[in-house]
Length: 179
Image 1 (cartoon, rainbow, N blue to C red):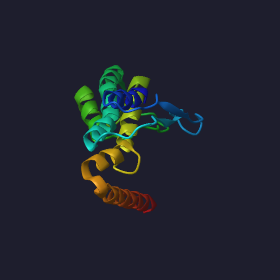
Image 2 (cartoon, one colour):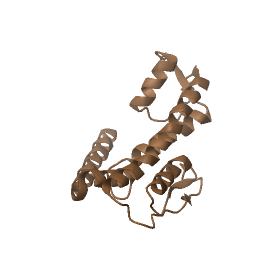
Image 3 (cartoon, rainbow, N blue to C red):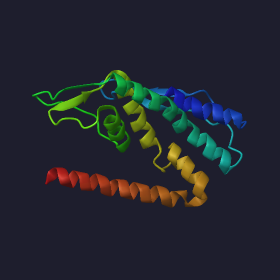
């Protein structure tokens, strides 16, 4: 998260924008496993043009990715296959990237085994999740700023369509759980 925010900070400074250092928003650990609700930087001056806005908005996710990719590779290198616990277990979701990297590392995993990941891999997974959520083209998220830089005033339509599709997806997932 810090690397992500400093990606925004240093890129904004490169474009001559007046910005604050990152503010981290604390959250109580029992409620949020990551211990934070995120972080923000305060833009004290407007950006010069949409190209610089695009670069500033994209710099954070790209900086975070530059840290998360080596971390997940190292974390998966340290991971091991263990027998599936008899009482069940809690696991992270499997994105396409994670499936690909796990397949690269372990090949086909037997049905009675699971991948046990160390904290390094778990932190990288969390970084991927937060970055993916932050790239939704909605509002003040990085994706919203990127959408504004790309589409101008039509960014509101892109955001509304995104929220509509997300709502339909959540409703479909809830309906499949109830069935």
